[in-house]
Length: 408
View 1 (tube, rainbow, N blue to C red):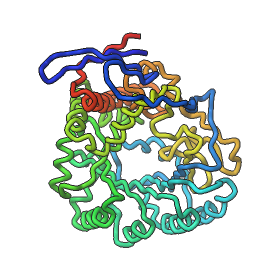
View 2 (cartoon, one colour; view 1 turned 45 degrees about the vertical axis):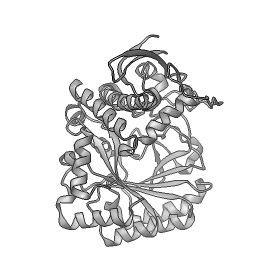
View 3 (tube, rainbow, N blue to C red; view 1 turned 90 degrees about the vertical axis):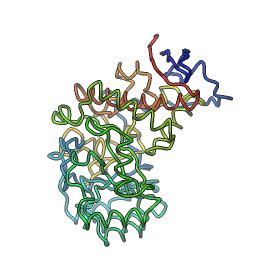
View 4 (cartoon, rainbow, N blue to C red; view 1 turned 120 degrees about the vertical axis):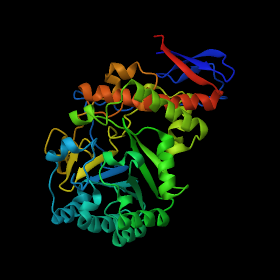
């Protein structure tokens, strides 16, 4: 499907270029020599076309539970808390003992998830040393709100070289809960984390209806934590429940416009802003290698057989944000070959995705959302990714995208 992009130069002159997100062809921009490749088709998962999981996953996500000491107004897990399994410390031992029965080889990355992972401190203290000994080349990742950090936890983070994503919304933090930076002791340990793990920690912010001015977010963190604080974006809010649909997740047309503009202006000025340089490079790369739409998997990667989310009782879920007592249980490691991801819909089966100019960037939003929740999430993701695409075109041409029109 081709789109006409209208570009405007600094002197006000305009021109049109054509772009096809299905084939990654773009007419009107000189990309230099192309590097066309042979591509494999990504799994197109759906309820009728489920996919299994690999015995040799590259990414192992271990869900400790969905309990949290905060109550984010847009929490992607809130609607799943009742479906999460409860586990005991003895389940950690059983999990570790059983690993060899289904896990072959070493994962490249092991992620420990909550809720808030440090709510499960006793389990983390047992899991991480054992996993690090068994998989010495694996990278570890923990996403945390930072409110429970102390010397003991920081020592474990340092000892096992754990990457940390610190969830904090800056000027929009009230949507998450109390600001740990307002508490002297909690602030002390967050600052210690940033100092001791300088290259292995980032502050991750979610853009919402109330909090999508990137300049304001940047200034807020710089004033409180210093000029070099590593700020990244978790992305724009997706909608998982009615409360989010009516609140933090509902970006009206004016909000969507300002979100798109804010992203473009930040990235046009600094292509590395908010850790989005990877997305910029990925889009530009897609043009240079002519990446076909058939090669794209979902944004989260959990449609891939080599990405797996398990809880401590061996249940396999759609992703780490879902519970294993409900519809998102897709199997158990004791019957590994029967695992079937049949709870998701690849964007190839969504008309709105297949007729979207930013599908190469968005990659379908959340793969299990439906109805009004998906519709609003789609609108939010479109504005977010259009801002990034506009910045990519700016860096390639020095011109601003001022219009997009589909032409079949």
